[in-house]
Amino acid sequence: MQLHQTESVFTESLRPTFHFTPELNWMNDPNGLVFHKGKYHLFFQHNPDGILWGNMSWGHAVSTDLINWEHLPVAIACTETAGIFSGSVVIDHTNSSGFGSLENPPMVAIYTLHQNDQSNQSQHIAYSLDDGLTWVKYANNPVLDLGMKDFRDPKVSWDASTNTWLMTVAKPLEFKISFFTSPDLKSWSHLSDFGPLGATGGCWECPDLFSLPAPTGEKVWVLLVSLNPGGITNGSGTQYFIGNWDGTTFTTEQKSTKWIDYGRDNYAGVTFNDAPEGRRIFIGWMSNWEYAVNFPSPIWRGQMTTPRELAIVEADGEIFLSSNPISELKTEHDYSFEINANEDSIFTISSENKEVVINYDASRKKISINRSDAWLSDINDTPQISPKIDLENFTLRILLDHGSAEIFVPEVGLSMTSLHTLPASSVVLQKTAKRLQ
Image (cartoon, rainbow, N blue to C red; front, side):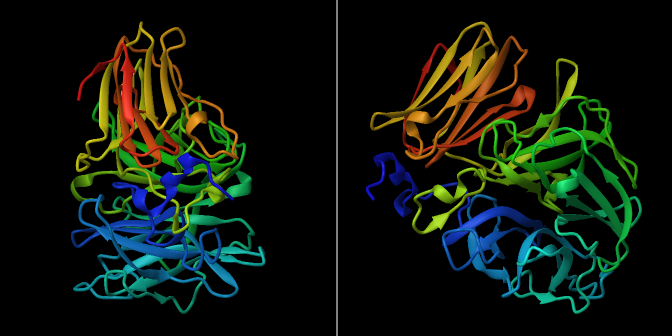
């Protein structure tokens, strides 16, 4: 079949330049994000044997700057009867697990083992003593099994207030996030459940719990919850809750549903454990389950969002979670504009008579992305629309790469991530907005 001409962006010659892609084959959720010995480790859901979802295993790559990545062999492989689903990685500095030593603390992966017959999902662990190159599965797995068909995506972190490990894990069909504690990563005790709350139009997945300083200086806690379907733009999406964690229970007074991204292509994102200088760095899967299998990419399929640094910002008396590209990112395809909230602004990204149109509507005070003219020919699409922006002036930043556009309004913590079929070298034209860089 002859592909639509704009779909050539998904060929090897136009592989994204600063977004992570697998060397070969299928990729979806980021897993096991951790910083160790000067390197960021990115594990990810991966089919090592094909371009479509299946044979779920953990791929692996490392980077010193989150931009340039070294591909490594498959870390934890599936078996004939079970897949290695999403999870996390910690560095066991005190050797609480006994898998290593104080001199060489083990890297421990906590992941969901998914039975291929759909009968069970349980939490397993494996450890590495060579910085993630080879892994040994724990002999007494599973470490946590509730006898559930859907129970997955453990994000584990060290709770310094109790000197124990904390697991944040999803009960997808109950719209609940469960919290468990452990002294050694092997035995786990239930603390509490959170939910249902917020968006419940699809199963809950890939949770993450962490603290950030608010503009007032106080510490607040953020709980990320991805869900599919039921996202803000249909299909996949990631909501967040801002609240309090008392060591046992997460609570929030948040009334409205808030989204980490108002575009169509940012799902299952989580943050790095042990990032230097206390940074909270996020990476998401840049796709949507509604069409992830449809891309005409013959070698690799799937990419990650730009790594983003998370922060709490305040606007109009309310606090939001902001996610902006990390400062390490340098690219010529980075455009910032000053927006006057009382004037319409239009940004046209165009190449070979195809275009993506980004529009700020002053009457509605909202931003929209229309990629229908530069999208896959067999997939219907509707504009992606932001919430209302109640500011007199603000910054709109557009970050382009081959096949993607990421939009940020840092003053209100707004991001919109959208795939398209244009190259990074596309012409960007603006009407009324003043170019800042």
